[in-house]
Image (cartoon, rainbow, N blue to C red; front, side):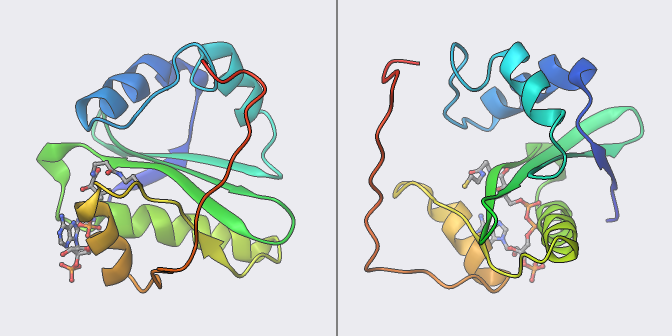
Length: 145
Ligand SMILES: CC(C)(COP(=O)(O)OP(=O)(O)OC[C@H]1O[C@@H](n2cnc3c(N)ncnc32)[C@H](O)[C@@H]1OP(=O)(O)O)[C@@H](O)C(=O)NCCC(=O)NCCS
């Protein structure tokens, strides 16, 4: 199935949060998932590629692509359960990879939590290499948001 892909609009905000909750993505409603924060992020299209997939009037998928000048990152890939296994996530990832490539970024990566076997299977299926030897470290100025 071919979905229409377009950029996030801030008016999509509630539908996006509802989708992320439905597919149980861990959210930071007081931090980076606040409406204001997302509104600021989508206004920086050079580094932030925020896309939604739509079918008719329904928002059925999301992806956030970003880059740090060297490498691209995929976040918040989600497809509504009624539309899974129809190639929508593959299409969203391809679109982010294409847009990153136009910016000169030809490596794309993602971090997947250990419990999320489905997501690992998906990324392996579409050609991503799993690095068993990498450990993720982070430091947060506001650890509780
Ligand atoms: C992971 C997710 C985005 C996949 O979306 P999707 O639209 O169903 O994936 P696609 O249909 O594009 O699948 C592409 C390929 O991956 C494979 N794949 C997808 N989900 C799979 C699963 N759960 N197990 C095994 N393979 C899977 C498909 O078989 C397909 O291969 P094919 O084209 O040869 O049939 C979706 O399951 C989802 O939203 N999960 C909840 C949110 C989540 O965990 N996001 C990732 C956070 S890192």
